[in-house]
Image (cartoon, rainbow, N blue to C red; front, side, top):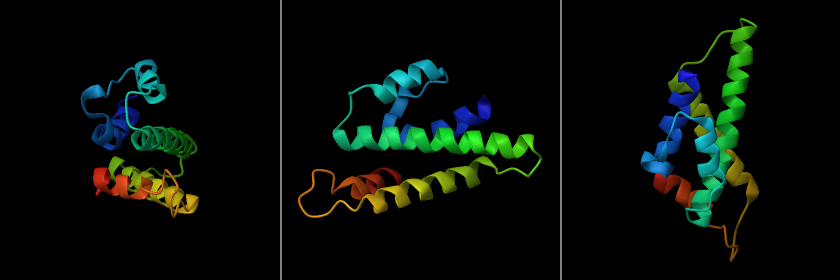
Length: 109
């Protein structure tokens, strides 16, 4: 679906670069692969989960005629959910993932 691909492309291309592909089976291989640093792998997988959930939710809202969100609104919501999830993990001190939020801001500003 072009809507799903547009959302995924706009949020994930910052981490994946040119590896974005409209074929979801190819994207699953990238998401499940280990070609990135640990921080980026975690962010890619978290982002993928959040995008799939919110696109599915948006589809249901549209099917039941409860309005719809544009791509910019949905991308903003996805970014907020990812930031909130990372914050809720509370990695501090010498945890190996303490820089996860910092990496998120490096990539997504």
